[in-house]
Length: 153
Image (cartoon, rainbow, N blue to C red; front, side):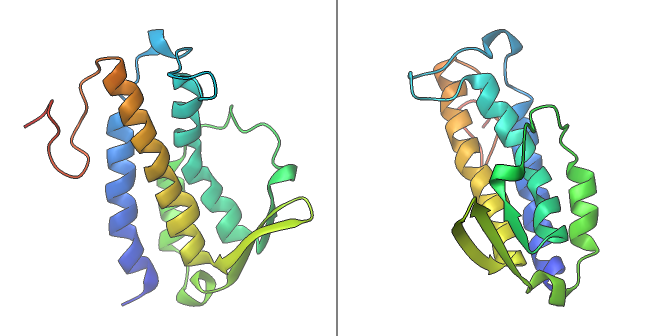
């Protein structure tokens, strides 16, 4: 089995779950945040929506310096494009080391497949959990994530 055959079903599941949660984000509440140190609801939703786009940097580069990123808020999420790129990636490319830097500081180096699972999927899942709490605090019914929620049984 190719690496992509193992990771694509997980990617599809997580992106679908994320999409369903993002669809519940109330536009009238985008400026709200639960704590002064927290993202606003809009910032958090935007960050979550943008995470899959970082896959492009993982698949096309071997070293990525986040300080060169610039403003990504205007970039629309392209999950179908990301999925197609993952599907076209060979095992050898998936196992190529990828380095994430912040200026001169190396944050981590790992095989591309590990970066996709950690930096894309797990990172998105982490923030999606935050978003589910935000939405619960705003009395927004939550969709099923890993099984039914109290709102959908």
